[in-house]
Amino acid sequence: MIDTFGLIKDRLDQSPHLLRLGRLFSETVLIEVGKDEYYLTFDKGHLVSVVQGPSRKTPWCFALRTDATALTKFWEPLPEPGFHDIFGLVKIGRGRVDGDILSLVKNLRFFKEIMAIPRTQKEVAQ
Amino acid sequence: MTIEAITGRYLTVDVQGVSQRIYFEEAGQGRPVLCLHTAGADTRQWRHLMNDAEITAAHRIIAFDMPWHGKSLPPEGFETQEYLLTTEAYIDTVLAVIDRLGLDKPILAGCSMGGRIALQLAAQYSDHFAGFIAIEASDFQPAWYDIDWFHRPDAHGGEMGAALVSANISPYAPNAERWNTMWMFMQSGPGVFRGDLSFYTRDDSLIPRLPDIDTEKTPVHIIVGAYDLTCTPEDAERTANAIPGATLAVMDELGHFPMSEHPEGFRPFFVDALAKMP
Image (cartoon, rainbow over all chains, first blue to last red; front, side, top):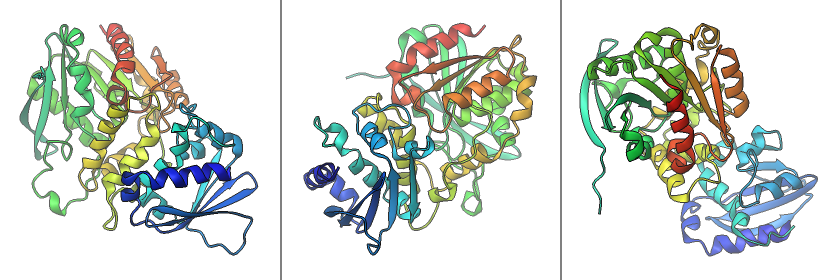
């Protein structure tokens, strides 16, 4: 999983349009996958660090909580209905978003597109 | 280089005492089919069907931009108004356009909120129509999001709206059409998507009217995409089951904006729907 977030980091750095979309986004996002926590810290759209938890003292802006199977399905090139979008995961009961939802919504295109990066990568690290 | 068969004009109608200048497009000759766009979008969603020579050989496909949408300006004095669409205003607008264009019992094809109002019209004004194609249409959907997100001074409602509705587009949609579909939401005027969603997510008056729809007189065919999170196949099936004689088709690889996001995938379902109409 940590390798996949590393892949997102590398691909993001090579995607000028995504960096432009995220130019005002400097926050930490918690991705919770089952019992595992990953803290993704962004600075002006760049993913500058991915730190695996658990941590009780890392502040975060908003969180996406899901499970490993759902995330694997989400990252398939042609996901099944419901697994095709982060709000789809929420709608089918396989995900939850909380925290500063307005920050997520303001940056929704950026966040959705960077989370979908592994879909276009043939070998997704598990 | 091509010049498309679609032509656009304007008409002016009085809706609930307010003059509305409405933009409409059409192509083809034959059975009139009036098409209603989704919330937060406009007539361009129907561009592929209007450019389909086989369909327009036997059908006059007409679509119009609701007031506040696309090329239809908001009414005079809009600068002090809060746009909130209502079932009554929507019904009156559709009937006024039909009357102004002199359409004789058109088939009504509506998507999303257009599908919702198609079912309202089927229940209350069926005499004006030949039949109803209700796409991504259901009895009622409460919002699974805060509609006020889409109209606030510190963020771009269009960009947020587009990012949200992308959840309803199928991953099978061709990339160019996915983005053309989202562009319309990006262009939507401030507060318009919110005002449409107010109607769509708060008015549940259709539910008790569904059993009154007489499909012997005017058939109702509901079409729904499996990737539609807003009107799911389960929502559409529940709605179809509540209408005696209604038929339902599920499109496995399409989402909430099928005619716009994936025209090739949608076409056979629309042709099949037309064949069910008298």
